[in-house]
Length: 121
Image 1 (cartoon, rainbow, N blue to C red):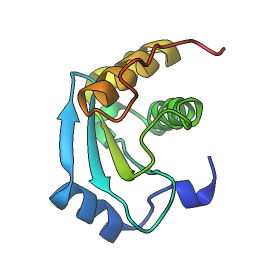
Image 2 (cartoon, helix red, strand yellow):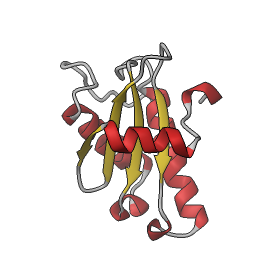
Image 3 (cartoon, rainbow, N blue to C red):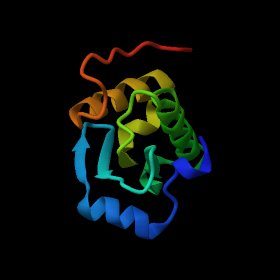
């Protein structure tokens, strides 16, 4: 995922947390915040130490990035997203992470209505 697609700065995270709308299921919370500066979405990840050790956290983050990479053309590009992983995410495989994220993105209404989860792998 390209650098300009990432939210890195604490200030940017805070803006999304404070002013964004949040949507959640058991594994993830997704905040979306309208983004006027860019013509693509940006993604921030928050995976706390409660999730597990560094290896587990990095794996969860890789999975989330990969899902957004696969959904790049489908996800509404007018928003910044911050994904917060909850504890159950630490034991999920890639396909579980993907369907869980798709579930929350549908709740957030940022995937097309007729979106079907086609596994491209």
